[in-house]
Length: 84
Image 1 (tube, rainbow, N blue to C red):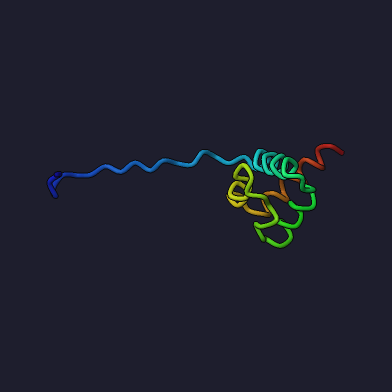
Image 2: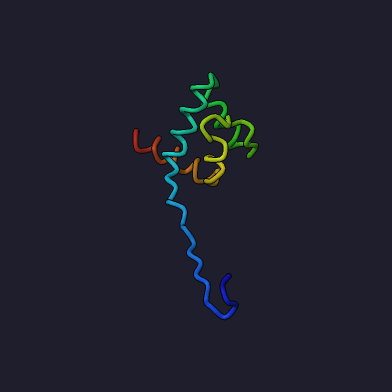
C-alpha cells in the first residue's frame, strides 16, 4: 500500500494523429467488403450525421466518428480538385 504523501505520476497517452484520407479509405473498404454501395453510405452519413449508415465491420463506424464530417468533405473536395 502506498503512503498518502507520495506523489503519484500519471502519464496520458496521446492518440496518434488521425489522417482523414486513411479513415475514408478504411471505411470505404469495409463498406465494400460488406456489399454496400460505399459512396451512397458515406454520403448518407455526411448529410445526416447518423452513424448507422456506416457498418461496424472492421471498426469502420467508430473510426469515422473520430473525424468531423466537415473534415471528410474538405478531404474529398481537396482530392477531387487535385485531380482536375
